Length: 634
Image (spheres, rainbow, N blue to C red):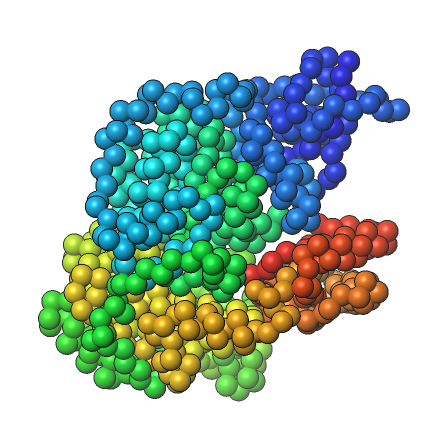
């Protein structure tokens, strides 16, 4: 009989000991019995026979690769998760991994495809950067929207394929459009596959088989594509690297971009980050290996950005400019940060705002459905006719995309107007239809939330209108709020004039913030680093304790106890208290934000705090979670 330590996939529990009559190798998946039934686990190592009776495991003939194992073993301690949680991120192979099939298996079947790769010729500056980036382990391509980053990506991928390697092109999920899929298949043919949450289970199984027999050599995917079982991964490209979508919002709180850089630091894998608006952290970390590719909207000195004092509703002169643009047979994009018809329903009599019963946030109003909806827990209720507190009349505030779309249809009656937001996009096919119709100029005005800025290639846009941007700038106490709003604005500007000259109109009372940095994002990044100072990234490491409990008093008590432990460990505390959204899905929420110049010191302090908390019955994962390098602070 053999005895093994097994991590149960997705579980917060530590490894358990099981027995088997068969010899099982580490990283093989097994079916493990629990009180609640059978669960999948992964064998970590063989161990001594314990003093208690063990239950038996059964091999599933599925395997994690050595590279997957190494990455899982890094994720668990760095992000303060269990091995079960970290291994639960990965997709296994259906055949056992062996060294003699690594890098060779199935290559002959893709030789023809590789020889038929069809790429655009690079410009002289693109070719120069390609040659310089090629031998580097990691680098940052800081390229304006429309400057030609994708062409460099594709040439790097082609070089990797010709040398027997596999490649990943990571993208935020919303950027994985049919448009991008078409470009990849046009260049690389059938050796490329798209991976994201919306593809079917059957399609995912086909992709895994393709990776196993190496008929698939390129994966373009969302962050989960990093966890697939590659046979000879040699290159990772992280497009739109500034995007917060690479950071998981549940344990393990990993950042796929940072994991890609870790892989390049420890294995023969090259990682390239790319963005028109690189994050402050990447800009600082990779400043010595930064390549500045200029072009796109701000390349011409004749660029036209106009600021108008205003908020989320278009001013009369903005409406006139929209009409002028339509008269020239050009298209218009309008950004608004809020969904629904209205964000707030308030009572002027008692000054109360309708809130979700389960969350401490306002309910948004949908006129067509006559409902109110919470955009965090998705609970809905019939829209009230009168104030539920005092029976007074209600007023609607903060216009959303649905209401703006309705109003503009009344003004521009002969114009085809559509929305692009999470309320109206129900499937990938629906997204494809809207983008195709817009590029074929069947739609003249496209209204959307941040989704509208995400890397879509619009050809005939003559005007971008940015509304409500001041709300984004002033939202919350996030130390990255300036970075987020500046990146968003620059990305939106990049949607105008991709083929011909375009204009951008911004309704804002904060033009003095935006003006010095439009077309000069590198100056913004330098200023932002100086403004943040020594205690915030990129000059320091930070960690966030999340505390939640269904009892408000108990949640506050746990926070105060962790504060006591933090001070005992000599932690530098940046802030602590109730979260910006204090109640979410019936849990009261508090936080503690700590900082240190040393990642090692920070981890040691957190480990000591968690050990002391566990002794008091406060296990991590139930009421306490730790987010290393946090990006989300709501």
